[in-house]
Length: 167
Ligand SMILES: [Zn+2]
Image 1: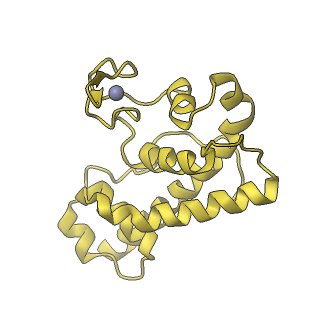
Image 2 (image 1 turned 120 degrees about the horizontal axis):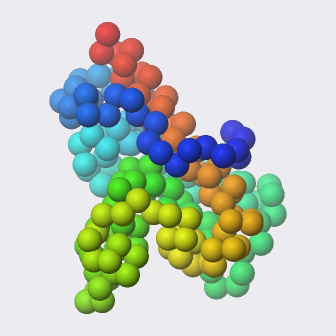
């Protein structure tokens, strides 16, 4: 896996053409993670995503150790980036701050202006992780994209298997 500049777009040309019943019937040979992403995205079962979180935590903490990421005391940048990556992968059009509710508790969500729908900008991503925009762009964006890309690769491999099994 190479941290590059993956597009933060969904990489699923088949989206919209696949029904949950197709997924259930065509998942032979998939790993738990591949199956989980497809089950969530096409079947909307949020609990299904647990193995994906675990896999991406593993990817992220290994990267952090290898590259010596410096996380300020009391911050959980790595875990927040994993949550963000799963969000960007599976719910790219939903506001990341309020998770589509339009409010956080009783407070109007400023990020999406209460609409609940908004593709996160880098500013929103920085805010969600709990850092400033400059630090995100300068240091953390590439790291975040590596985590996101690991998730996108799982989905791509699952979709390849799905396409093969449905032939
Ligand atoms: Zn919002």
